[in-house]
Amino acid sequence: MNTKRRKNALTSVEHSSTVKQQLSYDDLLRSFILDCKAKNLSPLTLRFYEDSVRQMKDAFQAQQIPLDIYTLSVREIKNHFIAYLFDLGRSDNTVNGRIKAVKQFLRYLFEEGWITENVAEALHVVKAEKLMLQTFTKEQVALLLEQPIRKTFTGFRDFTMMVVLLETGMRISELCNLKTSDLFFKEQEIRITKGKGNRARRVPFQQHCAKIIRRYLDIRGDLETDALFVNINNEQISTRALQSKMQEYGGSADITGVRLSPHTFRHTMAKFYIMNGGDPFTLRRILGHATLDMVDYYVELFSSDIKEQHKKFSPVENMKRIM
Image (tube, one colour):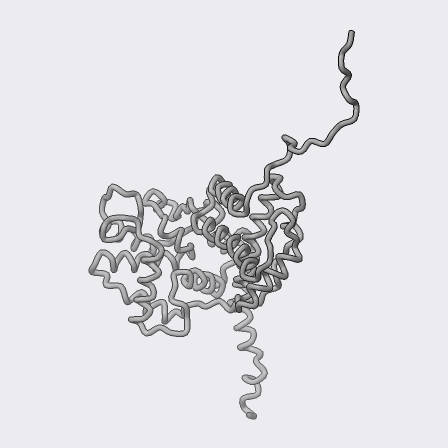
């Protein structure tokens, strides 16, 4: 039998079936965003992730530095992206937001096998200065609540929305996404199904707030939509519309020195809650924070104990008779 024997020495295989074909930066970004959509992340989060990852590419291009995502190192990210953002005058907290978004992108690439090194693990946020949170005073809250013309539908709606924000401290997106079916008057709770990170929770409200919500529901009437807060066309109100209204009411009330935003109501609720003696663990559950870090900061800023103790033992106050 004259059969040709196979050569025992192996030759290299140029196109292994186990090796992924390299995709472009933009294709990898699209794949990442699709994965985020599959995880049901909010549209706002998706936009932020995509914008942040594109900013890194733009930063390298602006400095005429090649960006190879498959060999990208932490040092390159620090030198050519993070440092670049600081050179543009971006704040610590802004830069940290971009870093966190890029970390998610790089973690996805590693877990999916597109890159061989877990760069995200070695990439850390910068130490940021804590921001002094802006809140409304009781007098400013009273002024804001006086601005909507409650004899009109939109006026009573805006008044109700501000009351709910102050009572619950919920985020503006959570407020605008509320459905009529999310209200539980017997339990005096509001169910938030679209919280940050897709974490559902229930937040309490008390009798006076319940009375105002019931009055709004009577004015709203029965509609085809299940959206709780609607505009004049009976469509769900947008976050942009509420933000615009807040600025309008703040301007008419001559309120200055504080950000006129629905989110300021969230910080204000936390301040009043802490100053009235509320505990941080309950506040964390009400606000929907994943950790106690932010709540600890609220306690640090607004604890009435610190203010009262200082009032009692202030060196200047105790020496004022001889000053």
